[in-house]
Image (cartoon, rainbow, N blue to C red; front, side, top):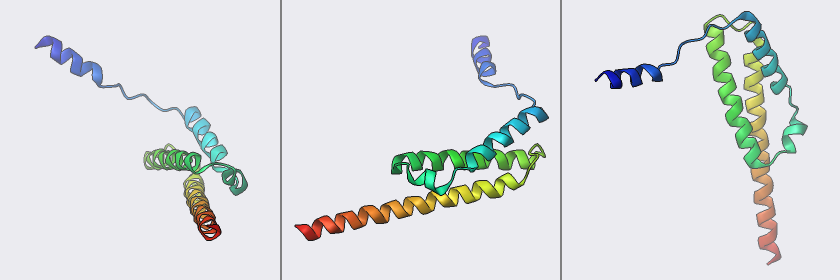
Amino acid sequence: MAKKEVKEAEIVKPVKKVSTKTVKKDAAKVAKTVAETAADLRKLTSQELQAALKTAREDLLNAQKMLRASELPASHVIRKMKKQIAKIHTILTEKSWEDADKDDAEKEKK
């Protein structure tokens, strides 16, 4: 029984304290990734956009958690992240329309 209890205790990770310096670095990092323009995003493939969307959503959740814990120094980052997610969705939609148009053009040629 003692071994089982030790294994369960090892799984639990200690909560690390977040310093203001770390939070500011994270906020700067988030702001940097949010600053991607639509032109940069249009150069990516659909799979890369899906990955960017997943990352953006995870970053948004982390920023929202930080905001609730009063650890986020700049709350405007949340709005920028939401706009970034919307940009990615828009570009994904545009790419799907382009693919559909190409498929229709190929069908007409045959």
